[in-house]
Image (cartoon, rainbow, N blue to C red; front, side, top):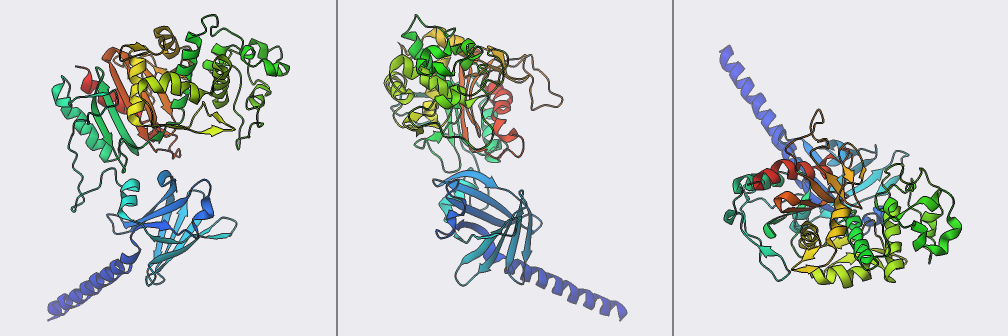
Length: 499
């Protein structure tokens, strides 16, 4: 009798437990999914971001999780990382603490299908931030590298790149003497986001485009900001200009190209050569803090008037402003801004027509902000691979391509630096391994490298070019995910194509 009563009591308790669990699950159903800020409250983060998206879902333990996404020009810009999420089932209110110790608190207005919220800053200021449901297209662009099927699965299937009239020759991985299975396994890992927020991957072997894949809603028609890969293209443009001025070489004084600013020259600055600027050893150090605007009509005066932090040639110091000076040198040699000169002498011959180069006071940023199609980035890679030759036309001299892409100074134990190009060899340590080691099997790697995972990688001895674009702008991991494209290439792509 007692046993039957005990079993009955346990049954009642279990029923109550599952009922409560079901009730809790039902109570959060309305808050799950992807939300986007309303037009009225989206201005909170402008101009840095136009909108914010919020993805709320249950994890494997049925606990609510939240991810934030800042959006600029309808594209992912940067994550909004939350470290603690709490949900009040009674009030239907979700509270999300971010890494800056600010809190986003939202309540569900089920009737009006809106999340009414506010950002509570550390100093208790509240900034309204309301959300409405987002569409599926945004969900694809933000959450999924490839959209899953109805069972939540993503199956990768290789497709030969499309042959279009842009100067690139497409071929299938199955027609080559390569490890196609290894490449397919890599693509599956990319879809699982092992290598970050990769948005395009192109692989070219023996001047043929074998792999062209896009993720997060991107396709071959969309340009991407290549950030500091712009520096490497600026180097090509300078090489073009110097090819037409044989009387000038990289030992020329920097002030030879800026005679109007001779008043800024002193004993140390007089020693700065063009080579120093190209190798970032001029002694200029970028300012710290918010960017300062150049004087209208005199964009280089701010740079040249700055005191040097080190003697010319003494030390490598990464400097965006040095790269911008190269744009002034191009103008001095050609009478044309870098974008105009590129249109006529580089982009035109390569068939690059869909691009955008950000400017300030009419002058393009030569350190960053050139927007290109990934296929056009591949053309730049092939141009360098083939020593400046494109379709039997010598665009840039072989001498400049070889000189600019070889190592001139040591950037760190992981990289050497050329003329605005990065260089790796078997003598450089592999930072992605513990302890850091060298690999006697590693091939020389010439690289244009841009913030967030933009890469043009050239491996000459394998006749190989690898291009990536990405949006790994969250550097809370020290930039590990943004830089993961190098080990991906060294350890996954190169071994698959070494045959």
